[in-house]
Length: 398
Image (cartoon, rainbow, N blue to C red):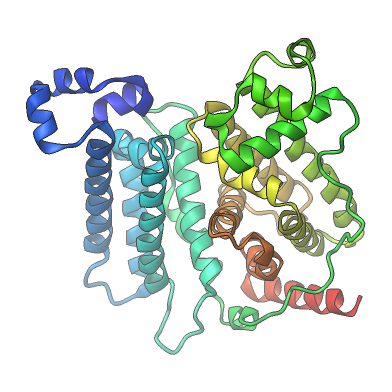
């Protein structure tokens, strides 16, 4: 299973090919597993169990929490670099299998979050990190691993465990206690925001229909006739703009992401400086997602469907946002490429959690923690909290 998934992807082979590779009969295979998916999930569970056991063992007996964290993250990085086949199955291909596998990845995230929460606590009486920050640290680490498995040399997806540790440590500041209970649900930064998918012409009608269908019913249900019917356009009109459904979905995602970035520009400019601008853009995005569940579902849920276009779009979008995070920063505060990518991956993971749990409307309240994930690696924890607290207070007074 591990070999074939690495070579062809989960959807690229049959049970017959699997049993031939394993040199067992189909009869013996079905004595053990109900089908290909059940076998995949069994392998996935073994990989996760082995990974957690190695990480815990590596840090066992260490009294220093910093050393425990360092050893754990180095072990995780070594697992990605030294065994890319198993890492790809657990961190990439699991999202192409179906709803049961995606739910299994959610459980894995919870296990790693519990381990991370323990390792990120300097002492029993030290301030605890907000749960969304812990969730983000795990999501950011997973994002870095996924990105390296999806691009470059698949045999050498190097991940710097020491730099990953430095990024994670940036959130361990006593001032983080000031984020607990911080009310960020005041007024939206841009209350007059225009819709991200205006209906100006036939192409826009097709894109809007695709977004609505994919977000509510999933990519797998999309067909050209269904999109045409929802948009009220002819086959000739559809063919004029798009090659097929996959091309149409990618165009929909790219249009939404480009307009999201463009809409954030005025919010950033009014802030006056980089750090405040980053917070305002994050708060604006949270409000947009809370008010537009179609966009939220499409961007943060349907991208996990077995659709290469959507998976690549997610990677490109995170890369664009990471570049945006670094570009505007003063040179003394500019986060490293790894820190910027990890922080954006952290934001993405937290937002996905809210949308997947049906709590998208509550995202504005998570803006302080999300901003902390973006700003702490650049400014330091205390300075990042100062910016966020001041901005939340300013928003409440507006």
